[in-house]
Each structure stands twice: as C-alpha cells, then as structure tokens.
Length: 365
Image (cartoon, rainbow, N blue to C red; front, side):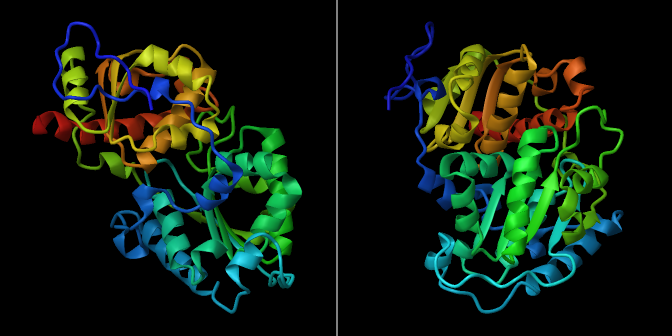
C-alpha cells in the first residue's frame, strides 16, 4: 500500500508517513459482499440489554419487547447453513400467515440500527443463516451476483435485516421489493429501517406510510414499530468540537499508527472514482482519519458519496480529526431542506460523534 508524502512545512513525528485514502483503490470480490452481510463492527456487541430506552419515550421500551418476541419466534430446525446459503438442499417451507417482518420507524439517532443489530444477534440461528446489510449493500449484492443467484443465496436464510431502506430511487426500490417478495415466499423473515422520500422536506421524521406504500404488495408482511426520541448521540453531550489547525491534524496523523491523512477536496474527488460498495474496503486497517481543509461539498452527488463514507467510518468506529469548517457546515441550506435531508443530518450527526472521539487522539499526544 502506497502512502502519501508528508505535507510541506511539517517535520516527521513518526518513522512512517501516514496512510492516504486517496492512494487506495480497493477491489471487492462478490464472495466478500456475501460474507460481510453481518452487523458492522460498531454493533458487534450490541444486544437488547444494552439498549437504554429513554424513560420519556415509552415507544422505545415497547420496541425492545416486540423485537425480543419476534426474534424468539424465529427459532426452529434449519437445514445445513452452508448448503442453504447458496440455495442447495431442501426447498424452504412457505412463510406462515400474518406479519413476517418488522419495520423500525423513527428519526436518526434513536437507536434503530442498534435495535436491528440486536434482533440479528438474538435470532436463534447460525450466523450464515442470517444476513444484515444496508439497502445499498443489498443492491450491490444483486449487481455482483445477479438477481436469481441473490434469491438463491438468501432464500435459505432465517432473517434478513435491511438498514436504511432507500425510498428515493424508484428503480432500486422496485428491484429490492421484488427480491423481498421472493424471499418472503421462501419463508425468510424481514426487518428494515428506511430513509425519507424526496419532497417530504422532513415534515414526517417517520416514514412508515412511505415505506409500506413503496414496497406495495409486501406491506401486509410488516408490522411498523414507531420509535420516538431525540438523537442519542447528542443527549447531554456538548456541541460539535471546533475544527483543529492543519498543523495539529498533520502532527496527530503522523503520531498515530494506522492513521490516514488527506486533504478534503482531493478525497472528495477520489470518492467519485471508487464505487460506494468499496468504501468499507477503502477504510480497511485505518485506525483514524485525518482531514485538512474541510469545506462545504460542492454538489449533491458528492454529498451523497460523503454520506456513504461517513456511514462506513461510523460503523467501524474510526475517529475523524479535521481542520477547516466544522461538520455542521458541510451541506448547503438547499441540501438540508431537500429530499435527502435525512441522510445529510445523519452524516452530520455521525461525523460529529467521530470528531468527539478524535479528541482523545489529540489529548494523547
């Protein structure tokens, strides 16, 4: 792996120069896409017992109780995971009557992904009989394997969890809805969260009506669980930390093993050359991301790519230390008032949390 040269005007702090995300062009084989359909590292150890409901939001406690019962109901005898993983062996039984899925409906930061991952962990089945991924990762899987092979791959599963079901791309929504219909027929249980449709302008932080309408014939298979609450990442916490200086970011990157160091604008350009399905691989082995010259993103395509990178960094608990503008100034007012506003607010929330984590890096030097 090549590394970036030390920025001019700074002396060496460590023997090795920092890594550079811009120097990485990962290639991700299809089998890795399948193997990685598990809760991301940030959610490896989460359980229903570690979810702390807000005492002022009874819907959170109710959601935990409903999901625990749902997981318990997914027990039973299963065929060999390795054989059924790729569609071999006995055909699975028809799905039982009644709801076969749950939809977690709530704003960003109320713990939907925590609950979705807890459901995955609590479901009594071998890991190879459960799948967890974002909507984007699921569409990438279809692109890599083809539709029929994806149906075969997932039809032997006990549970499929889909985080951030995309309601803003009609073509992909129809594709995934058709896929889910095949999986329901094969007896696979479903669980999902979603974003907000364009044009809603965030007046409904909740999207269950949109979700159930967009998945059309599948709506009868889902029970919607509304989860009220504030963004937990900011409950009782200080405002986003102010940006660091270029010098401090550079020194921290050079003093931190496994840290990357990139200028913000070239990184945005690099993201346009790497498919978003590879952003997880882009961060392999990275222990901290250091950015200089953070500025507002120039257009919506760039902004949406940055959202995906923020999600992958947050999943992997990679702290982000930056100079330039604070993260709450990344997106224009037009973007924050548009159809993708929920994604942008989620990215700001997650990058702010990672910026707080990065404060420990600066303090440890």
